[in-house]
Amino acid sequence: MVAQPDTAHVPPRLCKGLALSAQEWLAILSVTGYPLVAGVSAEIGLADSPVLSILVRVLTAALGLHCLWQAGRLQLTSAIQRWVMCAYLSFWTLYLLRVIHAAYLTGSILPWSGMEYLGYALIFSILPSIGGIRHLPDQAHRMLWVMSGAFVLALLTNLHQSFKEVADLSFLTGGRAKSDKLNPISLGIMASNALLILYCLWQDGQVRTLWRRGLATLLGVLALAGLVLSGSKGPTLALLMSLLIFHLFPLTIARTVRVLGTTVVVLLVLGLAVYQLNNVVEINLITRFMDLVTGQNNDRSNQERLWAYNAAWGQILEAPVLGSALVENAMRYYPHNLLLEILLSTGVIGMLLFMLVLAFSLWRGGQALASGTPQRWVPLMLVQSLVGSMVSGGIHMSSQLWFLVVACGFAVRAPPSGNPVRTLPAHDTSIPR
Image (cartoon, rainbow, N blue to C red; front, side):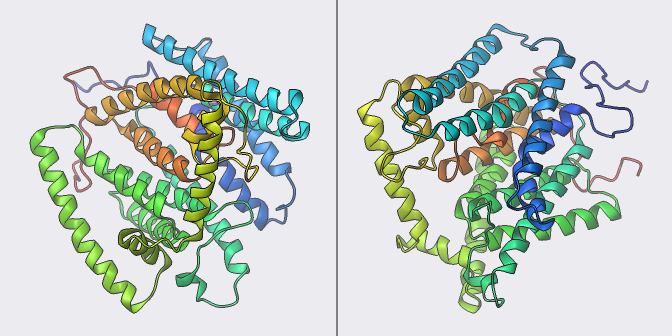
């Protein structure tokens, strides 16, 4: 007897003509929206206009509300989920109160800046992430193809702005790509996310046909080129960490030893090849990794971040319980580290609430990875987003991170214990094409 598909958790379509559900479009816009808008706006001559950005943010927030409306209520099936959601909302309440306090009571930031903080937090982070509480489709490969394409499109349009600003091709090896709206780390994060999604599609047996192989190869080459041009160490390490975690699950002693041994051999061979390549053609990303390994500290971006971290930490120690400000006083800017910013703005209380939510999401993500569900891209991308937020991330504008935190904890469904999902390996051709 042929098993019937499970329709209990199939989300409603936004309209019959669209191939993706509202929940899937919410996921795509939440993780790709801002960089995609930044690149496309520059290409069509609206780089200095907020119109397109505002439209996409409002659309993302509307999709979040739509998903909640379709659910009718928050789908919290257990007491621990209810407590974790209370912690999540309490964390955001503390942060919003800090914004109001800084903008309208102490005047440490301008009232207009306070409105911007509130708008970003509510429309760009809170509403889309709460909408992400609905169950994601078990088979969302079409969404992942669209998402990987959106990442690469955002990467290409932003890279095009970098190419316009240089006079020769020496930039391809000696510089770090960036655009007016996105720094090199943001470009690297986009590239690493695209590569991760393509790898998950390949492992799930979704790159079997000729045209899909060609499309995946094209997107992968473009994403890899973007990662190299960004010269970003953090996203590269995050990608390697995600791939390692992917192959470590389900955790067993034999599997762990085999995977770690293979990883060491691969890294040694790859490192030697990269070292020889750098002797022939100097590439910024390789040079920066070599400086990191040899202990040299010639990278100005590293020095600036250390200054910001030290300044923020000193300020945190002055008011550790509830925090003291939205920005560190030395540079009047957020410290480019999510954990430091949480301590700075909400103190130890906010940090405990955040860590509770994060621990729950990672625990659920581990269950998804162990079961082999196609939704395992969510915890893997969450790992990458967390690593990225440690070197370049802010609370109010990290829409990707917050959506993934909630989706990993509430929307990802692991099969019952003892019934792991069997996913087809990349070379399996048993499915009719």
